[in-house]
Image 1 (cartoon, rainbow, N blue to C red):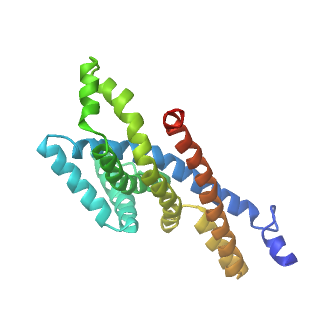
Image 2: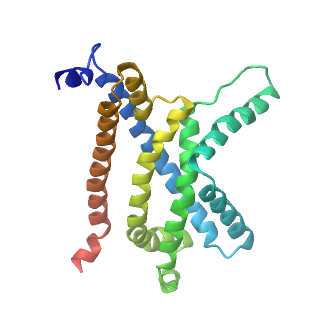
Length: 236
């Protein structure tokens, strides 16, 4: 037990610093990806809920692709394909070599997948809002933007929150995929520690507990957001 504690200690003799830095990158990656995925997923849901056939078709193609392709392949395509595309674009003006950031590639890849799934949640939430809500906004003289912001969006949050909560927990776990493109996330730091110490059970168990702790903390936060979103219902 003492040896295990020394391996997990902070400082030059333990791996606590490395695991902490990997945890910090994992959290940053998930937190940055979330608003990107939510915003883009909401736009895709609006397109799928639109009366314009071309918008619906484009949104359906998008969700079909990114829900059907494995997340790991999406990450590889964005990372390596983005590198090729960016270098080709830069090559039109200069011979400078530009390397795509693994963090940015991870955010984009995970954000695209998250947005494809979140669009389904938003679309279901849209269908749960009666058409009379839109008509009420028009009757009050509200613009389409104000109707969406003041009438539809608060209801949409309540309806979509359970599904989005599950997607957030999935996103937390999927951040581990970025270890394959050499990002120093929690899983990669754990793997490096295992390779150096030959203690796979200890470090993978610790990583498991860290991910579990993140999920539990997220659940508490989600419960708070749910209470805030339903505060009007509690008063009635």
